[in-house]
Amino acid sequence: MAKRWSIGDAYVAAHSGTAAERTDIARRYPLFATSTLEEIVAHIPPHVSLRAVEAAMRGEASLEGDAEDQAAETLEATPAAVAPADDTDLDEDIRDLFDDE
Image 1 (cartoon, rainbow, N blue to C red):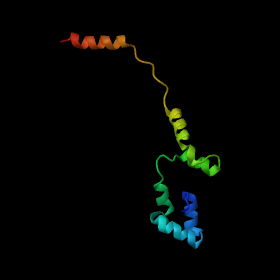
Image 2 (image 1 turned 135 degrees about the vertical axis):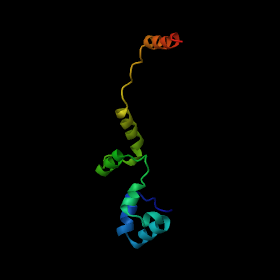
Image 3 (image 1 turned 30 degrees about the vertical axis):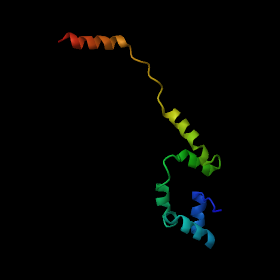
């Protein structure tokens, strides 16, 4: 069965791995094997957040928990609910518009 490469492992193997590893990556992932690091980073899927990558680099979490991180970020960034406006002022303004006619 073919090896399932992580991006990091594949990058290291493609640049300093054994001949068999470099051949495997070049055969299965030719665009990856011939891309620069900048090109690879530019094509990381949008669902992989920077927070998840940072946590993985620290060894704290894997990218599998990324959905939970994004949910937490969304809740942190969501403003508190605004109380509904008093409808009586709106009703009076609407009536004033029609009374002029």
